[in-house]
Image (cartoon, rainbow, N blue to C red; front, side, top):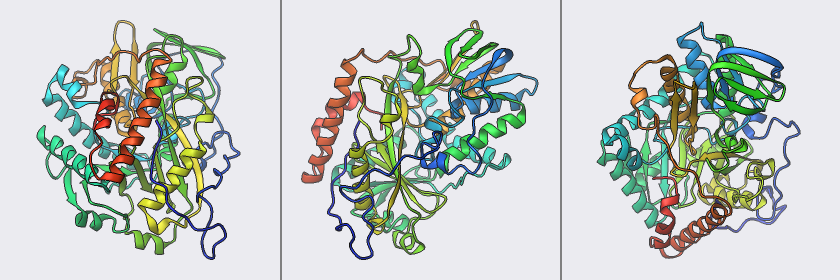
Length: 491
């Protein structure tokens, strides 16, 4: 899906005191030379990104986990911490944190991954409220582990601010808050804000009419968190093999190019890369979210913006943006980006797009005018695993020993932590509050075959683009957006 924003006038290249980088007509910043450093976050990892040992030959263990993203690493961490005698092995096709874990927006944010109403049909609204509460706890639990394991990743919990810049957006913000309160959350969990109240959080944001705030969100450098979590797993005794693509994941066996791992329990945590396995192509729609980052901003600009460190910001357009203030003082801003491709839907070529780059640059300058002269230094992206109904799932079949964590659809930082703790309890045979959450054992149907979903994804993108433009022009809600609502992430 494409990210859309209004275009702005920019200063002519070479104007005194102004940077032309990132303005209209500029080129996308060059890709990093290091093949593993495919995002601002991975490029900035303090430790070396040299891959760990490859899998070679046959090995045995108690639990084999395929995928060293957040889902796989949290599962390994909690299993080994709960039972040090378990032999836990993680098999990764690239390097730990290479996928979505090292390329996302860095929001450690509450909120369930999926539709509350869909979960409620199966488990009831009480279970949905418990799930929401668990995501609140998940934000703090991640912070606890970061502190306990001394992971240097810039965790800073200052909440999240959602902004509305048109009347239709303001109506959606109010409806979102009322819906959350309607099934049990309190004003201290999420509250509606007037324009004046929004200005208390970030006075330098432009054109704000209303918004909402939740304290249940933290800022983090996701790649540093992923790499630090991998190190913490190894300190506990987890074995991690990198550059070892799994060719077949089945009960008791993970077959890789260089060898195989035999285990009583096999957990798949491959997110969007799952579609590369035979028979799994329609399980997920791999949608890309693209990002840009500015150069480090001066203290003068931060003072003008009034954007406190650790506060996440997003808007309420149909094709929305999200942004954080990074550890080293940049603005990192992203949104649903590259259009879905019929052939090779997961590819490095999808991670950078000149058209999306320009729209993100325009959005940055429109939303935060004080940073309008900042040079844009990075452009990157990562793919999301989007299930047909956008609902995550954590499943474990005790008879076969096969488990799955994933389908996070853009909520992966916190959702993966919850799934890791839940899978720990499922594997160890413990009945807990986690194992009764609504996504445990949840199933969804596959996506439609190609080219139906390709055509549908392009039509959805155009509809949302047109809806945003209509609302910008008229200040009236775009009714056409309702046509594609069943295919969108729940709000």
